[in-house]
Length: 84
Length: 84
Image (tube, rainbow over all chains, first blue to last red; front, side):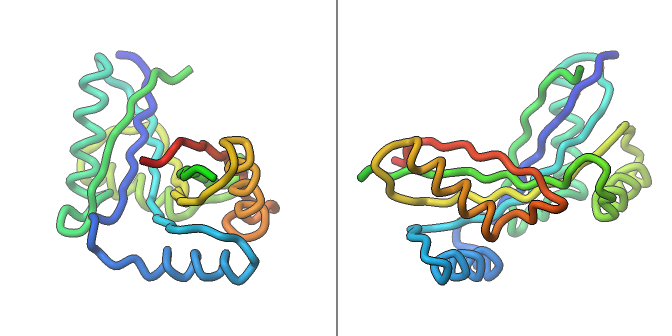
């Protein structure tokens, strides 16, 4: 077993309204910043032990499916890196 | 001016309690997953126009300092990529 960190990024699917991001964008504009768009996402860094990188990726994907993401409204991606 | 997307990742500083991450970790464990740690972070993808990549990075850093992160409890990093 080796130690990995899986980073799961959970974002709203295209077309799902994101009022928090809209509010943040407006607040930045009120501060004088110019920007043409803003999207927010949640990021989870999960430390886990697995036999190899593929196993770690698969397990993190299951975590996303079962808890971290809501498949109705979210897309997610998983990145895996060895943990020192 | 060119189009860039700046990704600002905002995470709690080491040592700052993160009850949301702790709750998520326990929920995953109740589902039968084994993990040795979980950290959560917010990720903002900001679309902006700038003269070059350094200017885009600097502007996104100012956004983090002024609004997206709370320097008392948060660290942040900025990644910039050209936007298609």
